[in-house]
Length: 451
Image 1 (cartoon, rainbow, N blue to C red):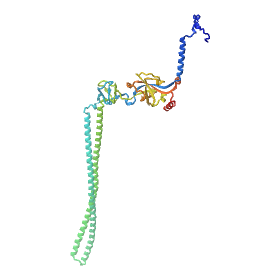
Image 2 (image 1 turned 45 degrees about the vertical axis):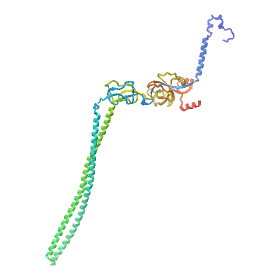
Image 3 (image 1 turned 90 degrees about the horizontal axis):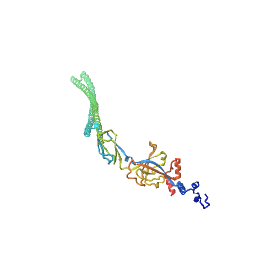
Image 4 (image 1 turned 60 degrees about the vertical axis):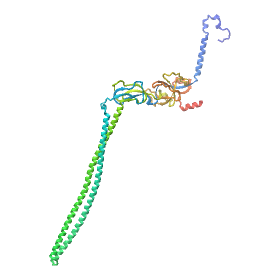
């Protein structure tokens, strides 16, 4: 309507019965709705240009930062029979506290005096090894004595051999001298006989010369006998020299063989000692393994094996324990498409189960009741669910995590990314595009440029 006339049709009482005209007139309530709708559209349009923080949201749970502080199962190292429980589920235990005691079920460990008797065997074998060692030492001394005696005997034999050699030389010279005397005596006897035949010498002189010749012949025979005897003595001395070598070589070989046998027995006994000592140590360690001890401070979560008299095998799980002094962390899982956006040191906000929070993911500064974290590790391979595990620790610069937070509690993680306008984020979500990726250096450069 142009509203030219000041006379309004809607105030004309003559038309109050015209229902068709009354239906075309907008009431005050409808005009108010139109204004409200227009205002909402204006606000929504303005909000499209507000900054929006992109994020990656993922579910996770609370765990321990270090592997040794996570929940663990205590196993039995040996097979046995449950005898006594010293704890209840939920009890707090310190490192070294006894959780339960088991008894042996193998017959080779039933002996109550197993350790003392094994120690007696160790002592006996040790004495046996020492005896063989002393015997080997005595035989070694005997070998040294035989070697010294051999040297002395060889020196004596060499002296005897030299004396025999000199005796042979002396008798040989005497024999040569006797033969020369025999030749001279023969010539003198011939001349004496000629002189006797010529009448120049008497018969007495001839007989004296014959007697002298017989003495010379006797001396030759005696010199030959002495020479032959000296040669026999030399040969005997040479044989004795060789016999000494052979005799002492045989004796030394026999004593050396006995010494090696004693050493072999010594080493065998020492090997048995080491084996028995190892066995004793194993028995002693096995005796200590009859008591299942707490590996660290923590709480008993669940007793897997229950009852008294129940038989367990080697490696069977006994109880679960949750350490109490571990630093908490959160395990969250992300899709492979979001892996390039994550890196160590990036900040993450968490909403823990049981702690109320008001969260504006796109405007993290308006959120309340969230707790900060810092990424410390990212797996390099995807798990069975085709997701990558991200380990997040408490942010030292943020609000401390609740002291009542326990391992296993749920956590909703929100990793904050780049700041973009709201209309851009709506467009990205509608098209299914990934969030904007940038490095830490780029982010710092952007913040510096804004300042």
